[in-house]
Image 1 (cartoon, helix red, strand yellow):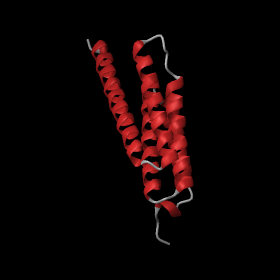
Image 2 (image 1 turned 90 degrees about the vertical axis):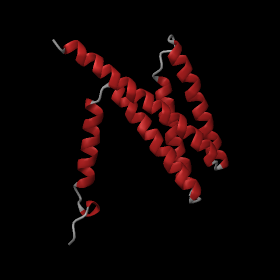
Image 3 (image 1 turned 135 degrees about the vertical axis):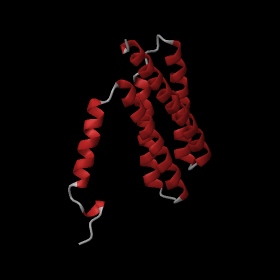
Image 4 (image 1 turned 90 degrees about the horizontal axis):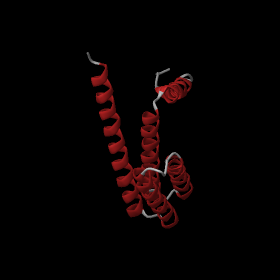
Length: 140
């Protein structure tokens, strides 16, 4: 029998364990990146499923993307101006996802993807800067 990932009954179990361990050991910033990555993945699936006219799969992917945005939204502390701005951006992204889901509109999905990708890149840069600053504080 030829070996491949799908023929290994343990590969899915190890992948799930790795993912669970990654989530359990991630910092809050890394968890936020994971959420952005998951949202980007679901939007890409939604775009693909619209092109393939797979309506049920598209709906599921875009509902997952909406749930991720709602989760990001729920973590905001609205006493800060940046959080208030993110609240409006997340709300706009949710509207785009709903519009795309109702009308099978890849243009709206493309805009949502662009916004989520920009937020993800900004968050990634902030984490990197935070690490540099923390490292500078540790160096004698």
